[in-house]
Length: 303
Image 1 (tube, rainbow, N blue to C red):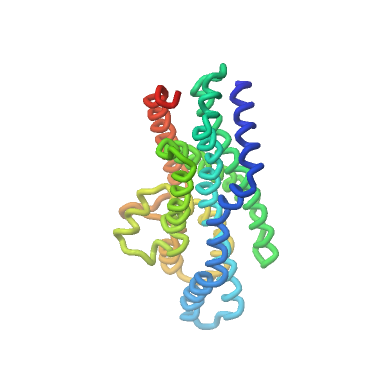
Image 2 (spheres, rainbow, N blue to C red):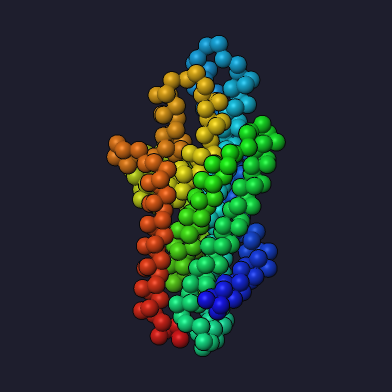
C-alpha cells in the first residue's frame, strides 16, 4: 500500500508541475465557454425566450435573465462532464513519457508489482480529475451566484461531488485502456486532439441532442459522455429551470428537458439520475477490466 501511495503521489506531482498539460487539459473547457459566450449561448437563450413569448402576461426582461442563467448553468454542467475526460487524458501523459523514455521499465524492476504500478497511474488520473473538477465547480458556482443564481444546496453539493467521483473514475479507466494504443507521445497527443473534439459533440454540448437526428442521438446514447452531462444538468439546472418556466405547462418543460439533454430516454423509458450514475460506474469497471486484461497479455512486451 505504501508503494502504491508513493507512486500515486509521484504521478500527481508530475501532472501538476506540468503547466502545459494542465492548460491543454482545460482547453476544451475554455473553447466551450467561448463558444457559449459569443455564439451558441445567444441562440439557446433566444430559443427559450421564443417559447416563453407565446404565453401572455410574462415579464420579458425577467424571462431573458432567467434564460441566460439557465443556459449558463446548462453550459457549466457540460464543462464539468468534459473536464473529467480531458484532465484524465492529460494526466496519463506522464505514463506515456515514462514508457517512451524507458522509465517505466526501470519502475517495473522495483519491488512494486506491475498491478500496483498500473493502479497508481489510474488512481493519480482519477484524483487529478476530481481535484480539478471540484475546483472548477467552485469557480463556476461563484460566477453563477455573481450573475444572479442561487447557491447550490448541501444536498445538491453532495450529489455533484458523487457525480464528479464516478465521472472521473469512468474516464480514468477509459484513458488507461486507451493508453495501451499509444506507443509515442505524438500518438497520445493526436488521440487527445481527436477526443477533445468529439467529447463536446457526444456530450450534446456544441449541439443539443434534440437538434440532431434520432440516429445520431442513438449513437450518442451508446457513449458514457451524454449520461455524465445529463447527470450534471439535472442537478445544476434544477432551480433556475423551475424559475424560468414558472407557470408553463409540464409538457413544454419535459419537451425542453429532452431537447437539451437534461433528461434522456432509452426507448420510451426515462433514464433516472441513479441509473445514469450506475451506467457510468459500470462503464468504468468494464474499461478497467479490459485495460487489466491488455496489460496482462502485453506485460512481457512491456518488460
